[in-house]
Image (cartoon, rainbow, N blue to C red; front, side, top):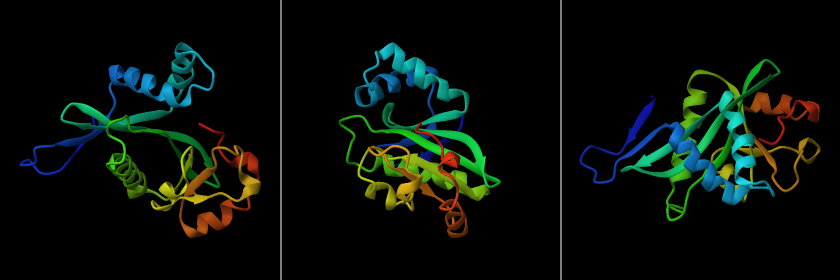
Length: 176
């Protein structure tokens, strides 16, 4: 299992970024359901979102045995010969909100993706897009938006951006 320790060994609060276990995914689905149920039952929500595990990996920050933040990194269809990833279900359960955990987890996963390749990283923002702008994400132009209430954002290099904003809306990943 992948794991990245954050903080020093003398720290009383140790954080580990790692893949979520099967049992933890169940817990995460229950927490996420409270936010994104979309009029589905819990069972329907879990069934729908479990499908993402076939092409994605859920990551968590484990702080002293507590899950303080999570997200999923999805591998999507390439665009213009470039690899495409989606980041979704960014979740920080109360009482851990507002402490920077989601930022730490996002920056870690983005860094890992970008370490070896130039890629498009998409997300649909269910919160103020300024949160993601601080991490280098840009709102797609209006004509490439598929979901008004959750605008699509992307992180990529300048040359890729210039090409991306000229593609058909059909090339933009669906809401995930």
